[in-house]
Length: 119
Image: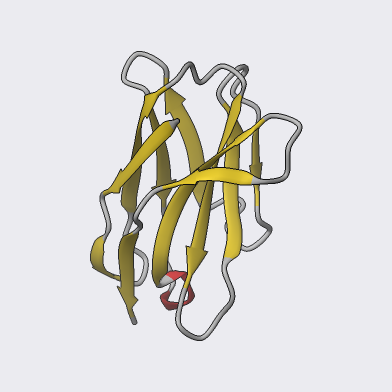
């Protein structure tokens, strides 16, 4: 089992920054990939970014590349999502999830944290 708890959401103005955190606990994380998804009422859930816990390799959706940065803190078992130059379109509930490397199924999910960006 892997437990995930998100934090850091809030209400900001367009152009502002936020840093989301995903605190992980449970089994050894070395073989896992941690992913940030987001979902708003008007859209389907979408991939935002992911990172390999093993070597830190990261990937991003085109819509957030160059604005968002995903990172991991091995000592604190935490994954961060630094979000800069926020746009109203970034408003959503953000979820972190964990999948085994090589699998496409995310077996573990957090409860989500809300981000609201006003223009």
